[in-house]
Each structure stands twice: as C-alpha cells, then as structure tokens.
Amino acid sequence: MTEHIIRQQGAALQKGAATEDRQEQKAAQAAASAMNREDGVPQQELERFARFLLPKIQAFYQSEEGQRLFEEWINRRNTEEKT
Image (cartoon, rainbow, N blue to C red; front, side):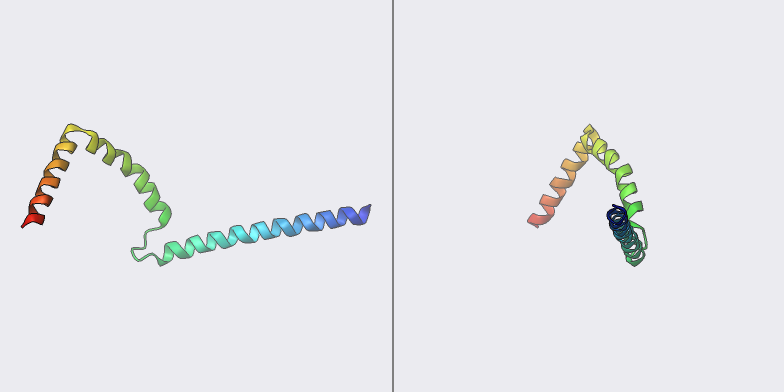
C-alpha cells in the first residue's frame, strides 16, 4: 500500500513539474516575442491599447459625422481610382 502511494505522489510531482516547465516555457517565449518585436512594444500593451481604442472607433463610425466622413473618403477614393 505504501509503495502505491509513493508511486502516485511521484507521478503527481512529475505531472506538476511538467506543467510548471510548460508555463515557464510559455512565459519565456512571450518575453522573447515581446523583446523581438521590431517596434519594441510588448504584445500585451498593444492588446490593451486596442481594447481601449476599438470602442471609440466604433462609436465614431456609428455617429452621423463618422458616417459622413466615411462616405466622403469612399467618394474620394473612387474618384482617385478613376483617374
């Protein structure tokens, strides 16, 4: 019985160590990825900025002014393509 418990504890420790290793590897990869970005801005910061900015962009384009400006841009773009 004691040997069985020891085996279970050993297996649990190995599983925990493997999980810990994977987590450390993911963290190291994320850090390396952030450090290797051309602009030097960490991915997490870009995502945070996008979550801040997206609702403001959506609100602008849903407004009357935003829709009017978008239509003007479409018309200018179409005019430039024809020339």
